[in-house]
Image 1 (cartoon, rainbow, N blue to C red):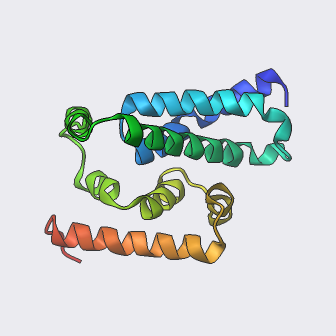
Image 2: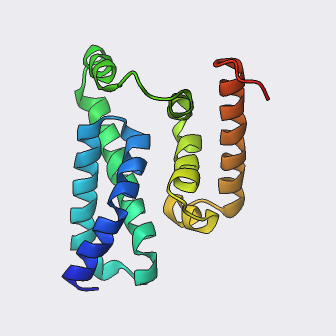
Image 3: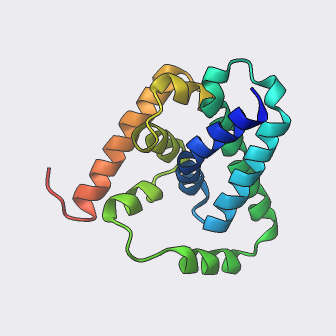
Length: 160
């Protein structure tokens, strides 16, 4: 894969990468940092990509690793009060109930849900990205749907 192909593939995956980063980090600045670092690392390690057909899956895995790296570093360096203060400032109030319910899910349920329903990855691709078995991914998708249903029917008063 040459530089132009790499650039085209990254630009094509940009919005998808943002959604994935946003589902993990929630802060726009952190999302931008994670995306930038992921693209940089991907370019540096492009020679390790075995099959160009899986470029987006490979790049997504790098992005998820970057997001977790940012979360780990934030836990070390940000005081508790400052973290919640910045979280309150970065949360727009016009999000839908569904978005808010999705963002309240634990990472293990939210990330597969976003990858599958928002970004359109197949279960096999999610298995590669998250390094999980197919049955684990399917179970997490099932549980995330069940948790969402409980949240939306209970908290927001939607009926079945």
